[in-house]
Image (cartoon, rainbow, N blue to C red):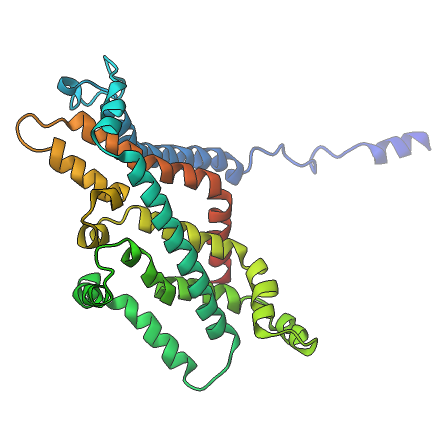
Length: 302
């Protein structure tokens, strides 16, 4: 009896499963991951090289500025000292911070209010009106440049910093569209319940919509700070007094002063370019978590 049990318990060699090799998908996965990282590294090098070249060239003496070496043979950190001595860079930095913050705050508040109205309220002609708002995005800036200047000139503000940010009090079509998509993704039942409890429209906006759409508001804020910080056209049009210059307008003045003629002092110009660019890079690294979260949430909402 035991021998019979032994025979029945013994595995049949003819029916035994053959040894399995690695699955085709598993063998390809490391290769695809390596290819992905190689492509990502190559793209990062392409995008980082101009900035690294700029920083390196700003630390070189004048004869070696254009030698295309990322590691300078000789360092000249005194270029930054010369920039601060040759121009009121600190005043320009303060002006840029002030104008950028004013532009970002005003456009975030105004655009979010308009976007909430388009997302929450149901009224005749809403889609037509929203289409007209989006249609303003199709107008080139050159079309409205002269009429807007005449408006500010008539108000006596054409030579001040007010035109650099006050136009954002009326919102921006792009930001209105962006924020409206976020507001539409919020459950409408929240607002209906708040309305039943006696909440005003302002309370619903400030206590329900704004906290839930914080990533989108931060994205709008960062976008507008970057756009206002790097804007050169409007400061060229409106600013005449060097004390009111923003950093891009001041950099243009540095280029006009040091970047002309056969004895152009390009190391001074490049040092000024680094000073102009560096704050935006620092700001992005500080707010990148909210920035990426806002973009990812917008992508999921479709």
